[in-house]
Length: 297
Image (cartoon, rainbow, N blue to C red; front, side, top):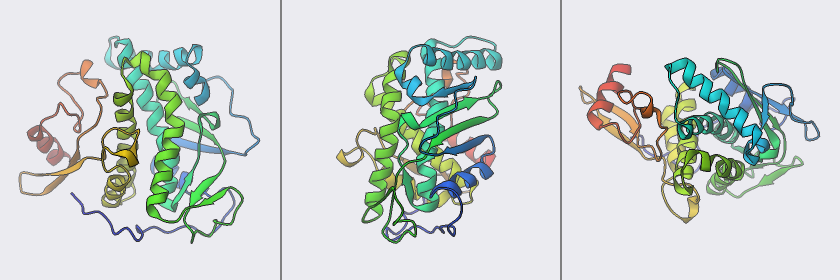
């Protein structure tokens, strides 16, 4: 496993000041490497999109018809893709994953690329998925952000300066938790999972989204090290998250290092395809991980 980076500062380069908000450049870069995920920033007074197909995060958190409609899309997607119906709790797990994975990136990408942490409460976010799921759009209403003392935007209105890297990591954990807590509360009964399992899923969304982004950016080792420092494991400092980044290294057939991790939760995909578990699933043994990772490297 890659060694943690020196805490003084991970390598990154802030762009020169440009039109937009302090996190615009990060969302633009996200769209470049993940073209299926498009983030649109709104002004503080702009309403969230309300056209057909859009769902506000606050409406998902409220449950009821909005959540019913959102999960109906996931149920139909499973039926279309696998030719069978999934259990209701599995559908809810898929739906939460698809939402939370994108929502976490709204916070972690600006932190990873710019060392800026926006606050994105549920009232500030809406999501749209097209019919086949090939493109997701997210609208986010701008607000305040946390940054380090040497940030060139530290004097802007809405900037909240924190003393160092660990304080900034605490801002990341708090911003993600603030957004996900009401969403998890709404999905939990439908998923038939308790708080620890739900926060384990949140842990996985944070870590695996950041890990995947780092790979796309050619910065996989830095992303893994940053995720490990952000979520080092169970403890008061990282509550309510359950578990940590949990990266470890396996030896490949030629002795080459193969990075993996142990998920804190299960995505329930095995209920549809028992023979095809995720490579980071607790159900996947190390020998199978090695075979699959070596074949794809």
